[in-house]
Image (cartoon, rainbow, N blue to C red; front, side, top):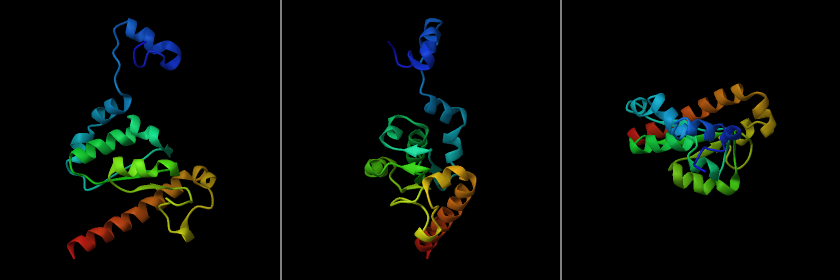
Length: 150
């Protein structure tokens, strides 16, 4: 079988018989969204997913976005709902930047006193925690830029 042929109950195989070709979904999306062009004016990329682990580095969207950003010299931060602790080092080496989670624990983006009480709390009110994370990361980014220029 060819890559993608077993996906969706064999639909990929049927489509290949009709002349379809296999393409990376994440790679295709970065191109359709015009990510390389968007990164031309970017100072920083924040990417992420629900749960990041070694599989993230196997061509998932956050990895593809990070590669595009790195190719253009744009710093990257991975912010996910949860990060598997055993995979943090591999993620950080590949991303070349911070790998943080919303969930409480050693890689939480929030100071301990402001962290969500549980990972489930993050899921229940994800929008609220993402907004808070954006503020925290933005403040950290601004502080680091002030230090660089001052």
